[in-house]
Structure formats: structure tokens, C-alpha cells
Length: 123
Image (tube, rainbow, N blue to C red; front, top):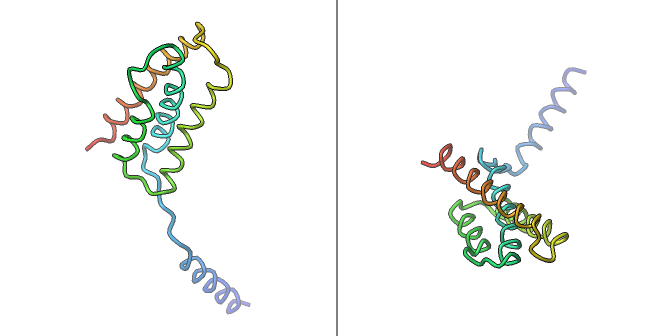
């Protein structure tokens, strides 16, 4: 019985050792995903309310490129951007007071989040 258990454990360890090592997210990954989502929302809302000051899609692309994520993380960041865009595109067709308020709140949150990432994790 004991020999069988050892054999099973040994086989399990061999099988686990054959699995690819999973990438570990950096500690700021959640914040980066949120920031990317906010940028997607801003990309939709700013032109809706008549402003084209910032190309949020290009900014998000630059941010992702600077982070140099692996492909899986890059896909998650891009997906978060798209989620932010579609979340506001579903409900806003014109620049209403609610859309302006959302735009203002998102800009403040983006600033806080970017500052926090920089202050906590920048070299």
C-alpha cells in the first residue's frame, strides 16, 4: 500500500513537472486592467461629448507596449479596454448630463489609478 502511494505521488510529481509554468501577473495587473477599461470608456465618451483632446486608444496601446506583457496579459488588457468601451456604448447615444458626469469621474479615476501604479511600482 505504501509503495503504491509513493508510486502514485511520484507519477503525479512527474506529470506536474511536465506542465508549462504559468506566468505570474505583476502586482499591479488588476490596476492596469482597470485603467485599460477606463481608457476604453473614455475613448467612447470623450468624442460623444465633443472632445477629441486625447486619443485614448493610442494611449492604451502605448501603456500596454511600455508594460511589455506576455500575450495572455496583453489580451486581457485589450479585452478590458473593449469592455470599457462597450459598457458605455450600450447606454449612451448622446452627451447627456449623465455621460458628462461619467466622463468627469472616469478622468479622475484614471488619474488616481495611473498615479497609484506609478508611485507604488515604478522603478
